[in-house]
Length: 428
Image 1 (cartoon, rainbow, N blue to C red):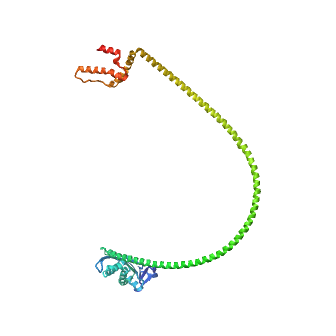
Image 2 (image 1 turned 45 degrees about the vertical axis):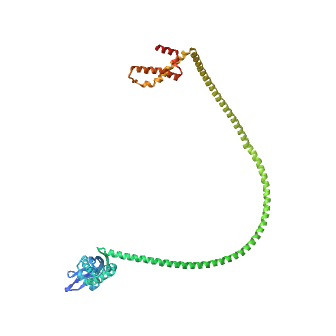
Image 3 (image 1 turned 135 degrees about the horizontal axis):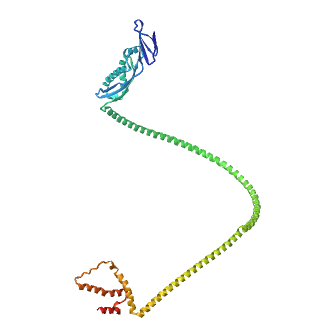
């Protein structure tokens, strides 16, 4: 017995072996096959696209510049019967990783050999041509393995000595210079062309404006002629209409005046009656109440005035009484003081020197207290003198100056009083 095997379009089924030692091989893509047990072998090979990234580091170019190039290749097993047989012969039983490793080494070898024949400028500036060259050189070798290179592109090119960046700076400067020149030339050409177009436009515009002005002038002239004729007819008809209308209006106005005269007479009669009614109404509603209110306010004002006058008179009488009482009191006090002074004067005149002496004696304690007030706070008085008679002399001098001070303060000369003269003579 056996099995029925099927494969999709992305795989190739290889059936080998058979009865009686057969060496026939069958290659089925997207179909089915029958396999016998024990005598038939079946294997599968993937037909899907494989992506390879060949990379050559520090490879010297034709000028001796070491660069690193990375490419991307898309490859797959070809489905042609003979080439599929070759691929199955070489890769059947291997994994996808092993197949990729073989193809990657092949592509890297060809890439390295081609880099040695080209300059850096050729590789960097024309990557498509470089990739096409690699694809053309490597295609026969991988083709003999039953593999087809679908695409090959250069992914990256760089070096460790900044050779490419320096080259790029030169190219950038040159491109920028050419671009600036091109922009300037384009702007110049655009300005010239714009000026020419504006001139042509203005010429056409002036010509069109002239024609339009001529046409407009002719139109306005014709319209003016038509309007003049129309306005003349309108004016004639309007004058005739206004004349007739004025006549009719005059008749209507006369009739309206007659009507207004009659209406005015009736209105005058009505107004006279209304005036009489309003006068009577005003007398009843305004004049009489106003007179009553005025009389009432007059009476109230007179009463308020009388009240105010009486209050003012009472206040004046009160102030007058108080003033008289205070004046009488002050007069009585003054009279008493005057009488007291008169009696003192008579007594002083009667007693003479004795009374003056009494006054002086009464005033001496007060004078002494005022004089001694500053000395009351003094604990001790020291008179510096080397002689005992000198101290006595100082005390005598102070006592001798005392009457002079009292005379200056009170006007009384103690030295002329008989009593003090007697005391002085006695002490002497």
